[in-house]
Length: 294
Image (cartoon, rainbow, N blue to C red; front, top):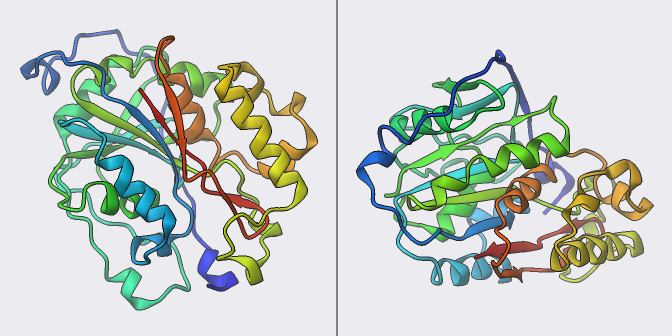
């Protein structure tokens, strides 16, 4: 895999702000009985090529999928949908977005034809109290979503909704926004944050792109620091990058791929187990570290 294969486009769309009152899950969720909370995932999604390649990481995705309970829908916070304001996809049939360039034609031919859920999108809009949620009919499923779901749920028969990342919010605000999604877990919704913790593309060593375990010293240090805070549930140290060790600042030069982790951590309940999988470095400055919560 070469340097061009790691290029991707991030889209900023202009959305409004506002407030909405808290309502019960009135449409989609009202027809479902409460369940034991569905686990939450954070997926280190890595290269789009994981959609069509066989490696230990996609094997890890499939292994985790076998442990998950039956679910009713999937909500994904992807690193690749940045907006002004917060949006949810609200179309019945979201398109598969190939938001990258320089990859083999076989990757562009991939489709993930999962249905959407306008009803779930509306329920999310009603659950969130801290900001207005825009119902989007233009986006779809970007590669942070479909390249992962292709391995978790290859049949593509479960409704999928994406939740955008408001690029103007602080990490603390994202964390607090995530807590407002808790009730969805009791309605059978699997919530997935899809990004990468160590994600410094400028520092990638493309000669070691497939060398599992290869990382610069600062990448190993930042991975160890983040993992320690997760194990000890000291999430506050992960919400203040200004006060973070220099190694983490090198690992997170921009927050787009880091924020999905914050959403997953915002959904952790006090007594829940947190398990790591695919906890490896690649190419010097990338990590595939993933979490199963609950």
